Image 1 (cartoon, rainbow, N blue to C red):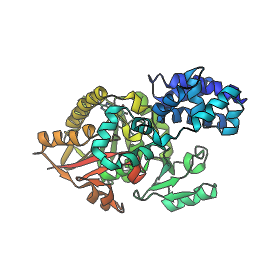
Image 2: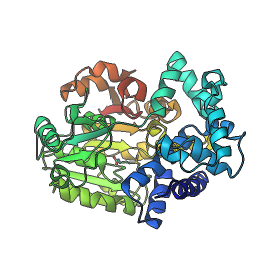
Image 3: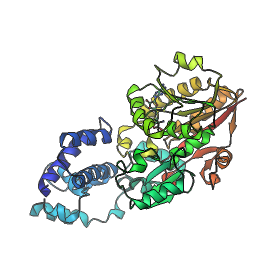
Image 4: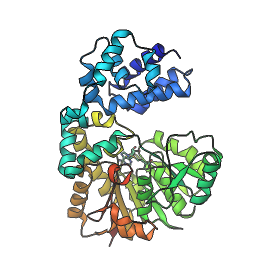
Length: 419
Ligand SMILES: C[S@@+](CC[C@H](N)C(=O)[O-])C[C@H]1O[C@@H](n2cnc3c(N)ncnc32)[C@H](O)[C@@H]1O
């Protein structure tokens, strides 16, 4: 495509994405559906440009002030990810001059806000938690996430999967913590590889794999994945159970559960029972109370641990939204806690970095249900599952994963056993 035409498309895409009224990945997918003729390289340039602008929104909006023309075009130029030469082909002499002048600004001299690109409420919360580690976190969240795979032990072993990837020209390293994981540099297309279509591997962040491992699910057990969504963790749990027992995949969203179906078909699992529930106090939950060996609650949350993948969330979340989520999280945890039988395990997890959605929820649960549940040490449980260096993942007996420390998304999990 001609550079100018592609820059115009990037400008249009940014106009939609920056409305922030829908998740950026949904906006980008809808945009590509409207422009089916776009090739892979052009799509990549457009998506990465939009994501770069979302990541560095405050900085780029500040730098864009000096230019002229549509603001979104200026932002697209500043965040351009389709190559410098290509971009030059789209710019007139004034724009070229302006860009050269903006590029000469020493960004290290700019104020903190323009360097961390976070809303004040979020920067404040993270600075309080992390102190000096705040800046390494900012840097880690500014980069794209690596691509992690989980090898499906029902169908393959990790080293066999790595060999098959190598044969397809894709280099993969074992992940440092999850015994199932492989990490790939870059974003090769996987969905046509036989290894993927036959369910031997699934795309899953290493952190998400560790949450499944924490449940310790085993052969023949009754397990509930309470907020199963499209089933990333369900698939891992089903494989841990060696395709035996019963694994209920609950979610209030039928649409999300529908997305689980093709993944289930690939995985070879037949022990999974997806079920849409009306709410966390659904009749189905009452019927299973006291009967379940392991319950995983991958709670709805702000998603702020996934900013590498979803940088729009820092602009779409707010303290009020977090407060509403807290109420939902407490209610889901209270209701799902009726499921484990005596000696059964309960895992509460989020992909949020905020103590409000993590430690505070756990403390409130302990205060109310401490008589019935005992907290378990997450590192010990992970060691039992063959996770090396599990101590590095721990904070006050909970799993606490950080992009800058562990190269995973920012996950949290607390584990209890019913007395
Ligand atoms: C973090 S996502 C789950 C992601 C999924 N476990 C995975 O690994 O792909 C949270 C899920 O909770 C679901 N949810 C929201 N409210 C719920 C409720 N009251 N009961 C059960 N699930 C709920 C949402 O529909 C969403 O799919």
